[in-house]
Every structure is written in structure tokens, then in C-alpha cells.
Amino acid sequence: MNEYSLNHAVRRSAWTVLAGAFLLFGNTVLSEHGNAMAFEPKPLQSLKKGWKLVPQMTDEFNTGRLDLGRWDNDVKDWGVWSWEPENTWVNNGRLYMRMKYEKHQRGQWTLYYKSGIVKSKAPPIRYGYFEARMKAAGRYPGVSPAFWGYRDDGTEWTEIDFVELTQRNLSVSLIDTNVHVFKQPGFPGVLPLQEERTWKAPWDPRKAFHVYGCEWDEKEIRWYIDGRLVQARKNDYWHQALDITLSLGVRGALKTTASPVGFPTTAEVDYVRVWTSIN
Image (cartoon, one colour):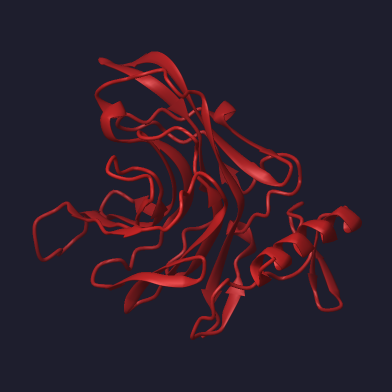
């Protein structure tokens, strides 16, 4: 068992013993909205700055039900994505996001899939370190679990994809870490800016949990997988405070050619954790 697996096992077993929703800091015990955490977690990889946990955006999913004070699971539909609250739930210390084949009508569009999403209800955050431990859904291709930040406030609309899994038809192991600018006052170019980058994993993200992280500051955006730096980009345009989101989206050929094969399918999230710099 590696160090991370050992720490993960300790975290789970600790809460079996404690069986309470408390956050422990040394000798201090704090109630944290029923979000069971046996210790103050640290980022998987070492970061240059000092960080503090943002409890309103952090969830271990250990309380047996989705914390609707923390997460919105009834987000407005857009594009080919139809979100339904029944497709997100918490059980056995995990968040589950399901996609179902379900033909339906929205306006003049005939659509074929409904799936799950949760978006943070806390005030949006600008800069930080974002980490989730996830396992992709079994259906491939056409289904993409994602951990991302975005916000459209009417005048500005930007997005940072901390990770998007299994959305490329070429290989199940191609992992996306993308950035987008859809609206921005004074943007020095043509919008939208949609910049995509992939990393080829030496494993199938559907077979096991992996840790996906993103460090975002005023100068640079850095992406990590299992503690390894895999991508980095100068931060030219991503200074808008963002909402944090986990979702299961329709991708690839399923956008235009629907099939019921492989549905329903479900992605799993062990935890999501957010830190902000103390400097």
C-alpha cells in the first residue's frame, strides 16, 4: 500500500470509529455542516505557498446524503446537457453522478440523455488549489466526468477545467485540462478562446480512483494528476471568481447520434477539497 492509499484508508477508518460530523484541528473540535472529516486534509502534492482549507467548497461525502446547503444539484440546463437532481446522490462516502438514456424534448430540441451535476453555493472563489479524487463512468466513448470552475455574470464568462475525463474518442486514457474565455471586457482578441490540452495517462481512469488537482494563481495555472505536474499555462485571462462544479456531460458522437447502449452509467467522487492561499 502506498502512502496515499494508507492515508486514505486511515481517513475512512477514523470516521468509522468517530461516527460524527466534526472537523478536528489539533485539540480543537469544530462542527462543519455535517461534513465528516477526521483531520484537516492537505494537498496531495507539496505547494509553494501556505494554504488554508475552504470548508464551504470542501466535501468528504461522508454524511450519507448530499449536502444541499453546500451544493446545487438542480442547475439550469444548457446545450445538450439536461441536469436532473435524481442523478446525483451520496452513499458509502462517495458522490455518485449518473447519466441515463431518456428521450425528452426541450423547446424545439429532441434530446436523449439526462445526467447529474453539483455546483457550489458558496460565494465564488478567485485563485486557490482544487483537488478531487474521482473514478470515471464505465460507458465510453461519449460520457465525460468533469471537475471544473466557471461563472457567467453577464459581462464576463470564463472557465477552468481542472479535469475532464474520457471525452476523447481516440483513447480512453486521454485526459483534458482546458481553459476557456467566452466573454471578457477588453479581451485582446477574438472570442471565444477555447484552449484544449490533453495528457495521456498510463492507465484507464474508469478502473480506479485518481487524484486530480489544479493550482490557480494570478500568474499561472498548473494541473496535477496523482501529485504529478502534467500541464502548466501562464495566466493571462483567468482572474474572475468562479463557482466549483462536478458534472457528468455528454460528449463526442453522442451529441449527434444517440444510443442506449451502456446506460445508465455512473461516475464516482470520493472527495472534493478546495484551499485558498493564506498569503
